[in-house]
Length: 423
Image (cartoon, rainbow, N blue to C red; front, side, top):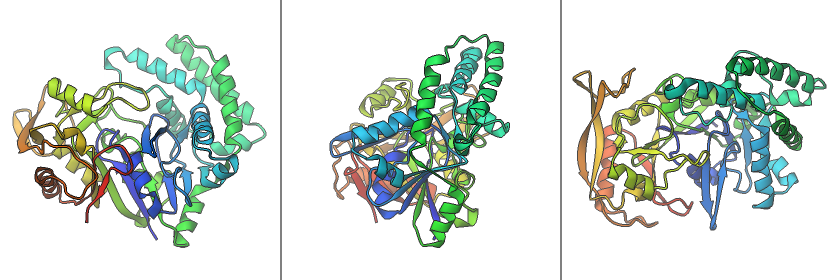
């Protein structure tokens, strides 16, 4: 068996959580491979809505295992809120959680001082700020690569508190340099309560677990967070996240060899959105963009911030397909475009006065503008039916033709039942 990978192809918020939930019955294991609680995967079913930040989106289905991989960074406070909600709102017992949810010993911990460092760094940037969620993600990955971090496996070490204090004292010196005011007492108390909550779950050497599972014929789906255009190497740097959000990140974030990767499922919206700062060639700063935001309820599930909206960007989509090796596409939120009589698609850019059809290294809006092709909209309501309107089918075919990749699922609403599987 091989591990399939599901990831976002835009700037995040594509709807990965819903699709993981829809596909989970086909898999034995769902494994999250990167990112932290800056992710917000929203799932709706049976009249209930729930947002996951760290826990894999397969947690609500029966008869499967959910793994938080080594590439993930974990905030014990946010994680406790997630598990408390699973216990109280959805009735998952401690015994069932321990059975269904496993955590890699190699996953790194977000400390309270990481959050303060994130806030201090963002504040110091002024108008050039990144648009960080200020959840401590970046500073945690910095400590990981700087070989200073604390990991899940360290929680069980007899000198864990001493290791924690050593790193916190280092962070305090950095915060003093930033002249950043903070109060550690209350959040630190909550953090150690979160550590005790983590101890109730099982820690595993996930690289061994997953490879043994594949050898035993188990089907695994690797779940990504954020989106490909936020990848630390291939995204719109420096307005990116702090981890590798592309398929290669599943290899390093789970310990799965490249030759063990199976299908690569790319999720994208029928249009584009972006949260925070950074270039966005097809952005609509007008009534059309505001209409998309209102209809699509485009507000961050983690931060509540309004998302910037724009037309589908084909050069960016094809770039993401290329670097990920995408084998099938799934289009989300087609219903948001129901009321548009015309739909535009960015098909190329004008870059430094020349027409190009690829995403360049620099996307300075002063040097780059989007070129569009206009298609007829379906201008009708969509329901969970296989009888999609002909103009939507034309839109789907247009994207397939231009990307060379089939669209296997079309989502026409937030609920898991509002999902159309295509042959």
